[in-house]
Image (tube, rainbow, N blue to C red; front, side, top):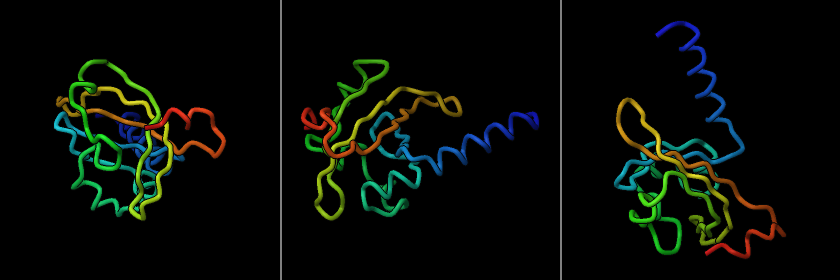
Length: 123
């Protein structure tokens, strides 16, 4: 890997870590394998603890593999339940990715602000 490539990866990693958006990476079994700081904050769970959950652990209905594999990219709105029991609407985009030659899924999600009309469609 060249120096510009390493710099690019370092900048991308730092940007993802400090982003306003929650970012999570999970495998095709739905297990979270990486999350940024914002994901842990939004769910009220320590980051290392989050890695023991599957991607649907904080949403009603859990993880549906058939929906995941039915499309290349998916987006929507869901209610997530934080550790303290508070439910908040989040918007998300999830897409397949290949990391180190293996298939994964990368999700970017964010809490919808109060009054956002999309929150009415969250389930």
